[in-house]
Amino acid sequence: MDARNEDRDAQYEVVWPLGHRVLGEVAEQERPSELGGRTVAYLWDELFRGPEMFEVISDVARERFGEVSFVGWETFGNFHASAAQEREVLEALPELLRAHRVDLVVAAVGA
Image (tube, rainbow, N blue to C red; front, side, top):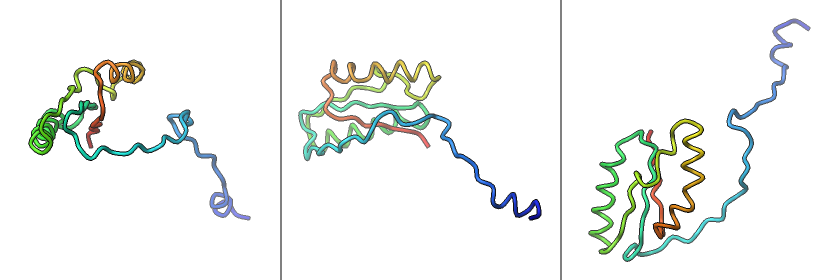
């Protein structure tokens, strides 16, 4: 067998650089039909026009649904930072969402 055929038949193990998933499947929750009276949190990775988009989303939501409260992304921090910062932000997130009585989250990830 010549070297070209050997290369073609070679097998390689593929690994994901971020490691194995620790969390299993997450059950999908029913979406509310109304936003009125709800609190919405903004999460942002600080990569693409978040403040501009959040302003538009907030204006449209209030126009359509009336009283909607928003908790700005600054409250939660940047979840696209150094590995240590990301870990801190994500570890603090559940308690912050509870503390601010958040019903829904808009997670904005820049492209």
